Picture (cartoon, rainbow, N blue to C red):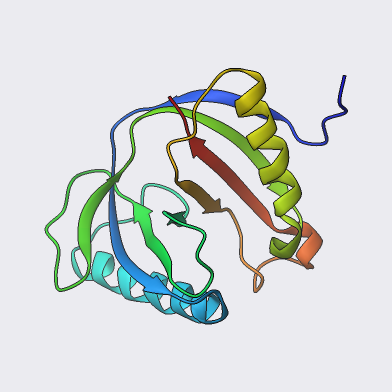
Length: 156
């Protein structure tokens, strides 16, 4: 039996509206893009007198490090009208393989590897996207070791 380092669980994702921006970015420009997009969405929500319904997320639709297809956003209580590239969307519904990861972003790959092994071992099929929900940021955490990220992989 292979030793597991991460607590992996399977859960059902129900309808969850979000306000988000979907765009293409290189991995080198992603941290700045994420920060700027979160600020824009928060300003938009504030103008609408709406609070986020949870922490921010990024959905990765591919792994092309020069042309990452990402959706950056916040969950909200109700479907909202969009403005420009700020669009109403939703977190994909269905079964998710989920893991709470604690540590620096650059070491997250170990959690992904273990989650992908779990998916194969339990007969699931990955749907080709990954959600990362950020419970704190490098500006909030005492150190990179204290960063909390929920990783979720939609499966069939």
